[in-house]
Length: 226
Image (cartoon, rainbow, N blue to C red; front, side, top):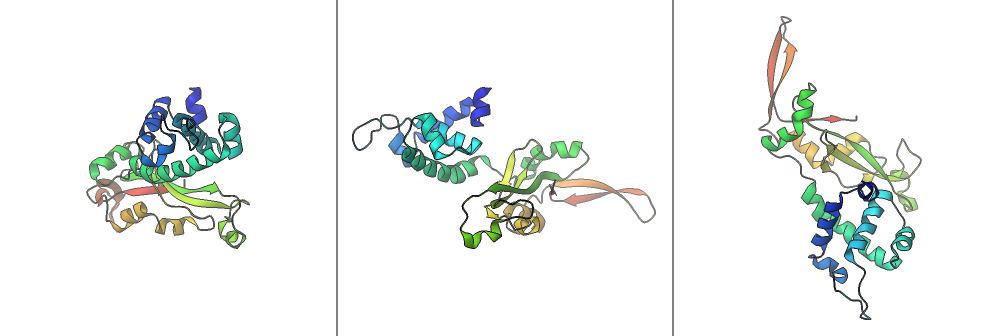
């Protein structure tokens, strides 16, 4: 629908998120019934949530948001800073959940198994997010090999339904995929065998006599770099 196209979430989730923020102390200045220092009603938190979703989904500027929502630019700025901090901590851990057991992994492995890739838990690759106005002393490290724009790189793992299972913190764009992988706890956990060791899968191979034999393996793995 139009709402999901414009704000990148279903309408019912927007309602749930707005209600959730109404109970968080960090968003108290915009609770229903709250007033500012002059006794004027505060901007509705529902309207501010819409500005935050449009900022994330469409990369609007503060001036764009202020003009279209008829809210002061400083109010939008203050809310965005609190919302982004909340989203990157509380909401991140609420929705980005890496599988840690065989039961959880099987939920993400179904499509890969059907495609002849048993044991695959997800797909992972680096994603670059444009970052403007980088301090000059950091400019070179934020210029990647594939773009003329400065950016931050995030290693993201998803299942075949495009649900995000893990994401690293931002790194300089010049870091390659192998470097990013060393700072990815989920990838390192799979590599070192500290997680998903209860996952078992089989692959077929030829033995020294040319016969097809079945081998059993323990642990999960990821498809990387497309």
